[in-house]
Image 1 (cartoon, rainbow, N blue to C red):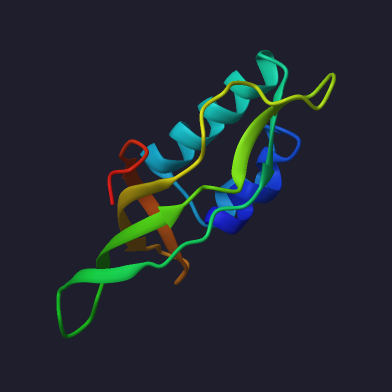
Image 2: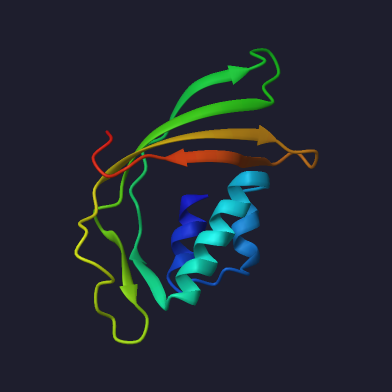
Length: 124
């Protein structure tokens, strides 16, 4: 999902179908709204995060349908810029963020992130 988000964030295309490739429900809504806000404010995001996801739990154990994932995502080189002049959007440095995500098995057999929470910079 984060690879798709990084690719879409490079243009802040809040309508990109790529966002729905690995996200649905609340997760997709959050991502779309963030991309729209960036588009509206004339921002793009350059670079990409470095993720190191770890499975925290699987339910049910025998035939998984829900997986909880924890990640310490490094967004040091994934920053927002003004689309009009390429200047940094702010003076905030990137950093590591704790991410907790719920991934569910969809009816079509694919796995999609249904919800996630990203904590502040330095949270892991």
